[in-house]
Image 1: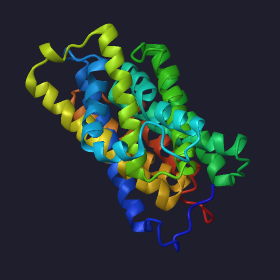
Image 2: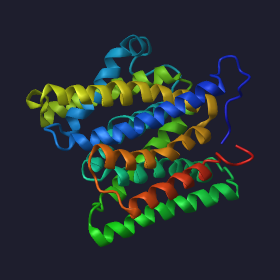
Image 3: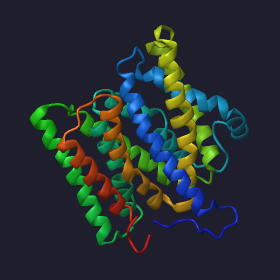
Image 4: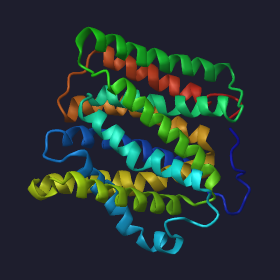
Amino acid sequence: MNTLAFTRTNSPSATAGYVGGTVTVLIWASWILATRHSAATPLGTIDIGLIRYGVPAIVLAPVWWRLGLLPKGVPAHLLALMVAGAGALFFQLTTFAIHATPAASAGTLLGGSMPLAAALIGVFIFKERPDASRWLGLAAILAGVGILLAGSLSSAVIPWTSFILLPAAALLWASYTHAFKRSGLTAIEAGAVIALWSFLIHIGLALIYGTSLGITPANEIALQVLSQGVLSGLTAMVAYGMAVKALGGTQAAAFTAITPVLATLGGGLLLGEEIGLLEISAAVITGLGVALSTGFFSRKH
């Protein structure tokens, strides 16, 4: 996967890319935990979506007001992939699945599948040629997911829908990554447009299906405003965009390697979820596989 030249004056520095990637993965891990926690509150997926995209839509209003709903120069199919891949559809799939999936398993299925999906898109659509270490990484990711699947079949802890919805959401995110790279938008511009479209979609869903925001305790709403709106919806979206612009999609995706491990630790320490050898093994193997499959340890990135 080709990266943007660092010598271009309008390209972010490599340091900014590494910072953006680190910030993103830390927020993603906390987002999984906060979303998992919301399953015990009156908040539904539509309610959380209103918060997730409402906050950045308000904060970035000057940006989307200047660009409009259909930014000039951005092909409609790229805009659609961006909104679906990092917006309303992605969010509804992941939130529904995470509500029924332990944080450790959700981190592995989603965080591990994201770079796997990005790599497959690169191979089959953009004709990339992964080296041996990347193929080894892809095999490790499949092994990690396979460990979870085997454990699920024997214990029924993880619903089968999670093995469909979370990888499907990862495919959406990978599509967003490729579309964003080709859109010509900055990280803030892309975040603003995606937030606006997704907020409008969730308003429509709320008008049809209703909302539980009015009966939810203020402290629970405040937690989701911070985690979903300020951190995930605004900060992580912009930070990930910085990483993609500065490092390219391949290197930026490598930062998701730590997500399964952080989600596993957080699920046990903060949510009281049981963490066994199965979950730890799947998280570590998947994390190593992600780092290898994205070329993080390759001589040629």
